[in-house]
Image 1 (cartoon, rainbow, N blue to C red):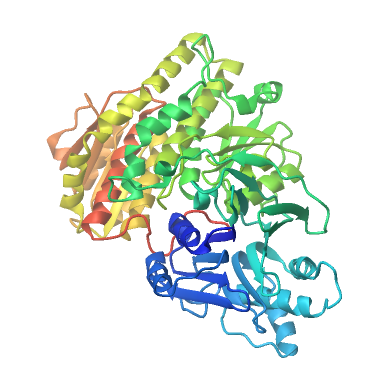
Image 2 (spheres, rainbow, N blue to C red; image 1 turned 90 degrees about the vertical axis):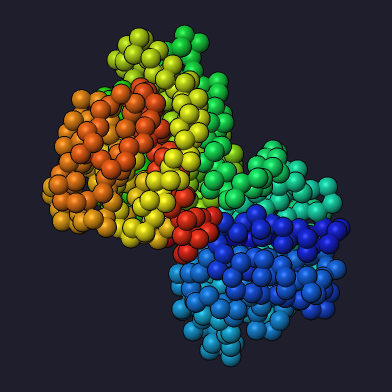
Length: 614
């Protein structure tokens, strides 16, 4: 959450900082601010609302500085006001700082600093940290590394999570960054270097990226940099090529990033699948699992840990893996897993799933699993992310940057990888070559099937228009389509603010049926299996109570006229890919539903893309 971008180099900072904020706005868009080091003072602009408000303000007073930091905020401590907007300046004007994360003991630190006569202008924990650095700096008058030591001492006094970038008025060619629990990356260019919360902020401007580990501090001086631990020991800097082309983080001809990313799914899935099948065409070959074959073959239990949309993908994976590999699977809220004392099974595998690889709850769940000696694997989309570095192995999604706050192509990729993992585990155990071959063929056909569904987008728009006045909707499915119902409801809630709930279809009679009325549409996902008749019976129960019904069903499954008001048809497909296909019309339905209400689908209220606080 929140976006940080800092620039230090030979050129002007202003354009790079504002452009970086635009690329990071999906991480928070309550307010935005920028500070430039002008030699003997900091020149600052801060505005509530979108980055464009800040850009307009900065344009009126252009800066010639080559050193600056900027921030786009998702509010944690304090309301959305200009005083609470970053960057924050210390009481003595010596320091300016941007911060992601939460300082848990800020109250005690603020009380200490207030006792020293320091006054505060905001409600934020971030201003407390900025003033703490300034206070320590004032106490280190004769220290050789006064600036660096002031930052180190302050961070050692903090509890919680942070990613920070700091400037000091006395150092006109130095920028400091540090992280614990909140991502931070250094971008290396020919004539400039960067600090950012996400490498997308400097795509096209930096050639390499160095991802900081927890407890590391980056010192950027001119065009040089080095990394140390917070204790002062030199740390190794591992540079990764910044290989995302600029077009991947541009909106192109689409009206929104969400729409763009929905329609990118055929290509995204091709990239997820490419090169990941065995030569005999009966199994999946996932490089991140190499070296763990014996452990995987003898598993007693798999535990998925994830949040939000990623957790729904894992719930689909639970059905698929148990079906294909016959291994017991549990899906945990990552935020709950770390605080539970669940019984330990020695032959357990923990799989963490996070598109960004920086979701704090998921990372903490991984750390808890490793503390207990469990094997950990990660599924993530971001090369070099914390999840990729901290797990014992894993798989990259390869779907390209996902900018829309409401995840779409990442969900499809995660489900696809869960199916591939189920296939690989199944073939290691007792899945027959013939069954494996059928699944490989189904997965290879998936991108074309996805394209077929997306070509029916106009029909979905018409259905969204028909139901766009509804304020309450129910989504229902069975087995692996139940998590799809949950995901469909989540998407609608996220971007349209309508109330929606997902349920197993058979649970209708156990409470939700009380909500049925002519103003509450129900969306049923029909399986295309022997369970279809049962789901159709549930649909008829809704119709008997004057509830509108939209059915999403495979071609060839007969839906009686009296059971549904509308039917959207899916291609006939193998059971392992049905959840992905069934989710596509729900993504489009939510998208059009929200757009018809005049809402910004890329920046839904109160949400941010990457949740790096608890």
